[in-house]
Amino acid sequence: MNLLELRTFLTIIETGNLVRASEQLNVTQSTVTARLKSLEDELGQVLINRQKSGASLTAAGVRLQRYVNTISDLWQQARQETSLSDAFSAVCNIACHPDLWPHLGSKMFDHIRYTHPGIALSVWQGNQSDLTNWLNAGLTDVSLTYWPNANQKQKVFPLLTDELVLVATKKDSPIKFDPGYVFVEAGDEFGQQHASAYADANTARISFGTAQLGLEHLLTNGGSAYLPMRIVEPYVASKKLYFLKEAPRFERNAFLIVNKSAFDKWSWFEECRNAISK
Image 1 (tube, rainbow, N blue to C red):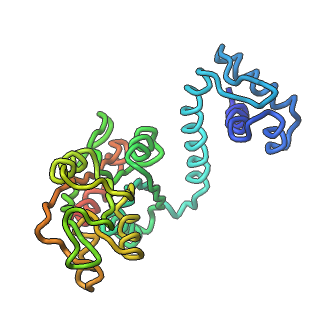
Image 2 (image 1 turned 135 degrees about the vertical axis):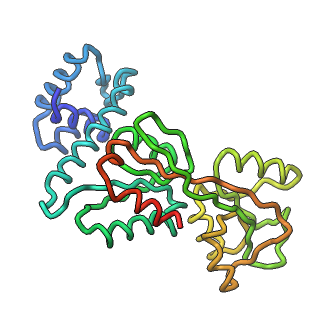
């Protein structure tokens, strides 16, 4: 097994057949076929069904794809990091949930950038599943997340508690049955508590997966939504948004997770963690 074979496997999946894969890789179709056969022979499994209509993954191919994607990403990251100038003493790969970037992820990034110029930085934003997978695979070193589950090779630190408040673009908006209400995903616990508190209310027509998208929608189109207090405070102060004070409030805990292999090497990390927790 080699990187060319793995890259060829991924290209066949991306393009949908061996002919287009050969064109994209700028090699002959027989070369693509030979690389795929070599990979299949080594694993003892048929990975791709070749049909006139195109190529499709077998069950074994589906299982392999996840690992090949990780290997490919790790290789790209390794190439990037090994090409860094000797002026850099370390690389810090930060994964951050989009809703934790304002005030927290950006604060960590800026703190390291200004106080530790010898550290190269890379930032990845993704959903909870992405953050977990990247950290477990070693693609990232640090994760700012709402999901506290970690393995034995990781350390978990409580980061903050987000207070989720109902805000609206009109101060007289109804707490229930607001046609402009949008539901913003904030985890399973919030979903359960929200369903209980608003069991007799209409289902929101529009929903968003992050607070940032929900906020942008409100500011552009009007309406109401539950959003983190720390994100909406500047807009409430400028009267672009208003608190609906009679509405129930909810909480969502955030965490900082770091791979122990990185934590043990980074004498500066504890000071950085304290700085962003203030």
